[in-house]
Amino acid sequence: MPILNLEDVKPGMTLAQAVRNHQDQLLLDGGRRITEKSIRVFKSWGIRRVAVNGGPAGDGAEDGGRVPGLPPDIDAELRERFSDVATDPLMTAILQAAARQLAVRQPKKKTGYGRR
Image (cartoon, rainbow, N blue to C red; front, side):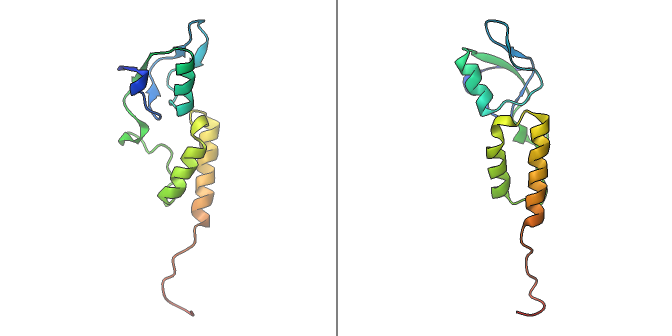
């Protein structure tokens, strides 16, 4: 469980311990994924270091909810649009449902058979 300076924390990392402000208010619970928004909140409360588990979500440990068959540009756009709520399990499920719908709607490649 490394403890990192906030400057070294990247979106996608997972908190090992809850982060609380100086008034002991919970800012983000342990086990939650860190987003750009949560890093901004930590900075605004003067948090300088946090304990994390492992590294970013994209390190191969997990697929981060990626939907197979979805073009990378659409996947990146969805992840950007949902980045501020990525730690919410309900919003993650909505993101995955939206990605599946977009993957189904992708135009099929023509095989060259049939009429032109």
